[in-house]
Image (tube, rainbow, N blue to C red; front, top):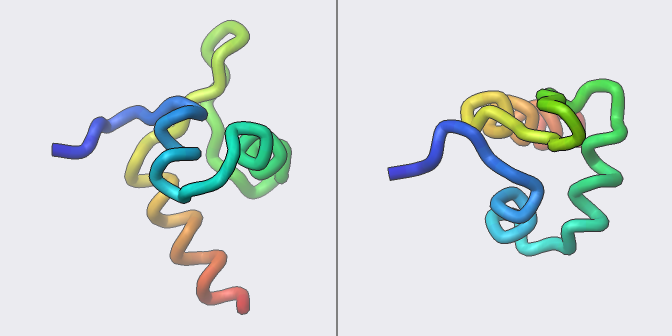
Length: 58
């Protein structure tokens, strides 16, 4: 079962990229990041929608 809320580390492992790259992606204005204090989190469903939109933009 997939976790409903993902951390930077979770996303990096899923996309097979570095955490630095994930932080760079999170700085994009269209990326669905949730700020909780200093933490950056992402809803799994929002990440999947964002990835689909990236595929469509190619």
